[in-house]
Length: 154
Image (tube, rainbow, N blue to C red; front, top):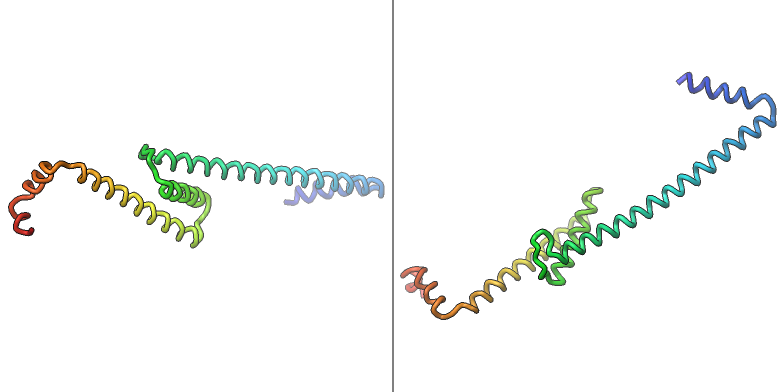
């Protein structure tokens, strides 16, 4: 700590010999401060630009994942399912960088419930479609496989 004070004292001694030297020293300090401030501002703008680009890429990535069906590889997602997937991906990206707000947590819960509901309906519909496609013989075989207890219940 004292070494730094010594070096500062040496600088002061060096530039305090005359008023012109003090003015030159002050001018050099001001120039340095101005240049460093300009560099800091340029770097801040660059950070903002990169953050915006990163956000755009993350959103694009989320949209592509949603459109491709995510990890499932199912390309037949509905518009509602795509919206839920994109919004959940955006919330996930926020959660990776910071703690979620209460509002964001509630949104994620809503989107998860909607997604589960949508996917549940799709699974139910596909089962109904399968049943509708079964022949009467297949349906009778299924009823017989349930056993004699199922006939008494009817």
